[in-house]
Amino acid sequence: MSIRTENGRLGIMALGWALSAALIVLFAICLVAALVLPDWRASHAWIGLYSVAPLTSFRVWVDGIVFSAVFGWVTALVFGSVYNRLLRP
Image 1: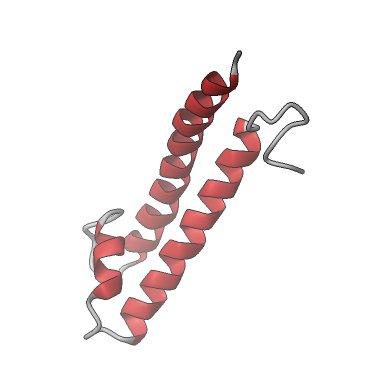
Image 2: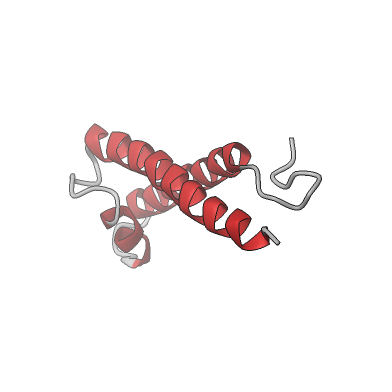
């Protein structure tokens, strides 16, 4: 499946899945890094965008995954719509 269609337009469904998956993976990497290296504050800021729950709670995983998917789809809808609109002659 391609994100771009034959006429150069972005497929919003493919873009939504791709962005959501990428954000979920990035969140998981940052959360694991925060758990393994608690003194390294770099990943805590990324986690703080998605949840205020403690790092060791199950809730932080749920919040991070859900909000990563939501933000991925919102970004795909906005970005894909604007991009496709700008392609129109």
